Image 1: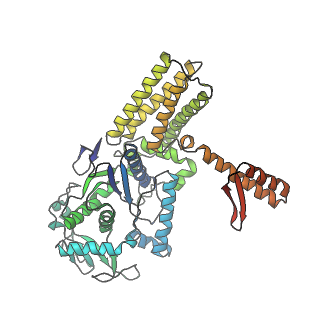
Image 2 (image 1 turned 30 degrees about the vertical axis):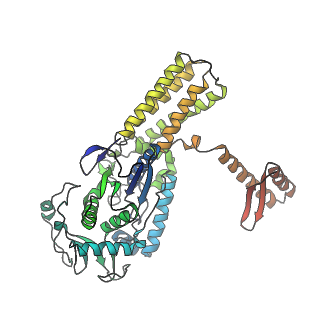
Amino acid sequence: MKVYNTLTKQKEEFKPLREGEVRMYVCGPTVYDYTHLGHARTYIAFDVIRRYLEHKGYTVLMVMNFTDIDDKIIRRAQETGEDPKELAEKFLKYFLEDMKALKVKPADIYPRVTEHIEDIIDFVKKLEEKGYAYEGSDGVYFEVQRFRDYGKLSGIKLEELRKGARVEPGEGKRNPEDFALWKKAKPGEPKWDSPWGEGRPGWHIECSTMSTKYLGEQFDIHGGGNDLIFPHHENEIAQTEACTGKEWVRYWLHTGFVMVKGEKMSKSLGNFVTIRELLQRYSPEVIRFFVLQKHYRSPLDYTEEGIQHAKNNLEKLYNTIENIRIALEKAEIPFKWSKEEFELYEVIREAKRKFYEAMDDDFNTAEAMKPIFEVANAVNKYLAKVEKPKESVLRKALEFFKMVGEVFGIFEEYFKETKETKEEELIELLIQVRAELRKQKNYALADKIRAELRELGIQLEDTPQGTIWKRINV
């Protein structure tokens, strides 16, 4: 398996630091507004990367942070008259709801900045002790020129940074390229005690602190959007490697921008569409499918036609899976295969090879899509050609779609709703019907539902909080 490393600007063989384990950090959101498609593209991409690594047998430890105190949060709170903490909490909750709706698997740990202030202070103190940080009139700064490898991720040169740059009036930094580690409190802003007076963390220091706390001083993958390469990730590298003296991250992965009419989708340009808006028009799987039609590093053009095209393609695949389901009801257990079964088997076998080959090549979902449609076309041709389809070859096709679904986070309607889940849904429905019958004082029918369920091993219990059910031995 090879991944493109932003640090080295080339594809490299993927070798995690610990055999069989991948430790992975993805920069999470600054929670001051709703999640838009540009953000979601990154989190869907890293969700699929994580799913594929797990599919390949790795144990993945994934950390994603929440920036719940920041200039943007403070400004938005001032605009709306809300408390910054309450505003951040509200949008953090919305973000998690959006990710759940999009079938993005939760991170193992979601550290928040406000819960790691002491850790951040300790990190800044270490940088100060090592001579990389200094206190200015308005905060503590990292002295960029002290870190010799500055610019190794983005390729930016220190001289370029200094061209036309200057220290603004009121800033306490020595050089224009230096960046804040700790900001001294301004009137009306949230603040915490520190050795440098009351204040709050700078943006860059939080990710260095929280990632090393939970993943160690060295880990495998650090990810985020292209817009984070500079200055955020560049500054993270400088302060972390200055603090630990070790090479910090083995592989840096970055997603391409979502584009709208040639411009990056962003809140500042006002050309964004929120996930909540999209989910009113399209299913979560359509959004995921739309995103995955492009390689994660490539720009993704957002148009309604593009999403509709993804919807149509996904429906074709669903129709194929449904055709297999129907065909399995009348399929034969075979004593032999004809030419048609062998032909379909070969397409499935080759498609699986191509799928893995594409995903092993820097998680190329765009290429991995092609063999999925090859199998769909072959299945439909097979079913149109044969009178009595063979069960074994159809199950191989179904297993292929199930594997794709697990990696891409699609087809859940078919492969994740088990018989037990359907049974539970039916019980809940009967409980609702019984409650309605009791409101109508039709106690005889309500009691009959309860008695019949008991015969089936389901005990209903009426509590002040509502009716609950339990499985019992009958």
